[in-house]
Length: 365
Image 1: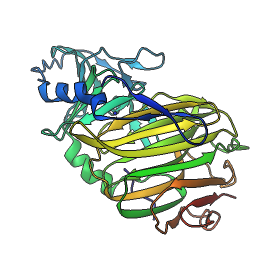
Image 2: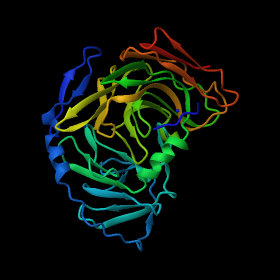
Image 3: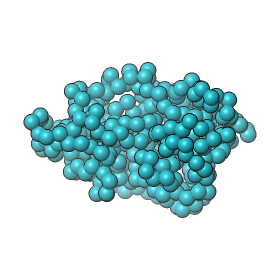
Image 4: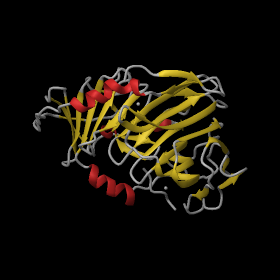
């Protein structure tokens, strides 16, 4: 989601993309039958809340993935974002593991700004991030093999939906956008630019194409200086909603690499949603997930964007240079340009179409 400042189971079949010789996922109904059946059978246990436990300080994203730099939770964990401002984590039987204050958690960089680490989750390659069809505030995350990894219950999702449309302000600098009546496939390519030549103040950049409605944005993202402590280019696929945010495995990217962001609308054994993939055509790597958080392909906004995702700079010249999106698959529409209205910056950025909408250049000072 954004309010601008004027703002996927048993196996995945793989096929070669026609261009770039990169493996990308193709999903069929049999691929997610296990996960879909499991979704209908899940019974959340009684959650045994124990507020007497010592509070934990969450400094990294909550995830069951066995990687360093993550706040590890067990497989099958249940994460409950409560109206009392706390996040409770339970094991699969409902026994509480930890309690953490959302306000005290480290803020994590997302493509739509900072969020508490308690609400940000890494998912494995090919994960299915499935919102419950009966409980709007419940999301189940399955592995590619159909194993339930964790469940998220967010009591505050309704109020966040309102907040997301009204109060949240992203750091979009320059972009092109258009709301379309219907879309089933979006694919854009762009080259990894040079790193910013200087940083008056530390900041993180996000370059992405994507689709969004009033509450959620799904986006293949090229990032720079994620967390303000990694001055390198990386890529991942994000789902940022009015509740928790999710991202697929992060991969290193080199300057000049050809990046491809793809969003494919598909129905899988009753689950309708989007397969979101970020691929490095130069290296032959990709990172992706499937989600039903947006179950429609109607009235969605297409975006090509350059954003300051964290931190800030007082110097508009602290940028990465121009970014040209080649929109390989896009409806025949006319994209609209957008620019920051930050004082002293307005008028220093431009959007050039050659032609519109198949080639979009975001021009920086």
